[in-house]
Image (cartoon, rainbow, N blue to C red; front, side):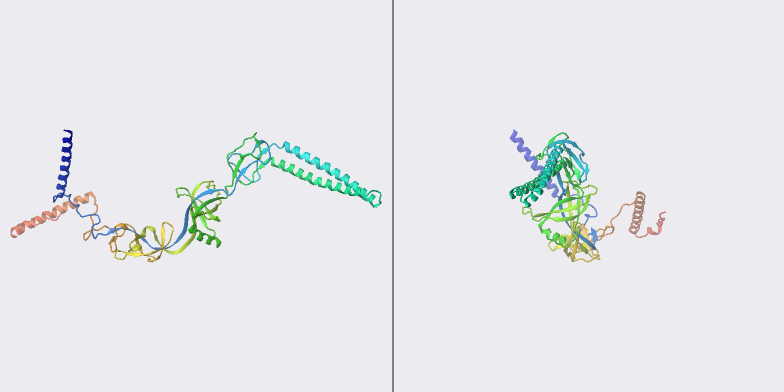
Length: 436
């Protein structure tokens, strides 16, 4: 029974499908066509959007992705060993070069400086005594009162003390330098990040952790990459001394963040990607660029002036090649093959095929062919070979038109009845009063 029910269900479904197909194939079963034909019947004018070729400038721009990179980043570390006595900066603070950032305990280094100074003074006294003895020995040698060897020994002793003073002076300078290192100052003007070492910690020169990090943000740079094929045009402009304009935009490419100039190019091409890195510099007075920020870069390489320009939407590609639909004075279009020049993404320069003032189609090209009739924007649409398409009228006006139509139909029917009676009733018929 289960198999029988399955077979009956399949048979019923096939019968319904066959019946529906037979019904659709009968004459008159198709839904009635809408009065007036399709929207764009054969021979009807196609509504299109137009643009006029005009003189204009086309900027040659290279678009790339970049990263905001500081011109200088410094990890501030101690150059001596000792306890961190105090920290004088705040996180996120902007500091100037030479500002005091932190203080390491200076007492051990003050003591070492005093010891070096004391040793230097001792050696100075010994040197003066040796020099005085040398003067006496010099006179005695001249009188042959002492041996020449004793005089030479005294000369060597004086030179020894002079060398000791040189060493002492170096020790004093080193001790003074250590005392200077106890005051940690900013090596450049920039912004400080988060503090990494707190007051009271013991710091050494070998610490992997910095006391703080200072980043130069004014000016700041953006590093981006361009294809190696576009590098020759950039280098040619740089060699000519041109300042190439660089604009950076946010991730959505809607908001312009900063305007700067191209600074330099890298000295090698990345063989794995076929690109080369470039650096652009920005003043960043409002700090709109933040280190390691992702940006969209537009590098202006050159500008084509006085070119014949049309919107990029007018350009079509097909069997004839690159072409546009040129509008003729009789509101028909013809295919015009053109040669393209530079483009900025929205407009394109036409080097051959168009003249200034020519109208081209930019919208509705999918319904066009060579010789097709078009309807310019703002004109009244008309059916093929017929009167203008009816437009909406106010409600009161429509009722008045309907009454007029019924009155005209009554007059026509009366005339037909008079003609059927041989015209005899024409004289007896009363004239229809005019409609008020």
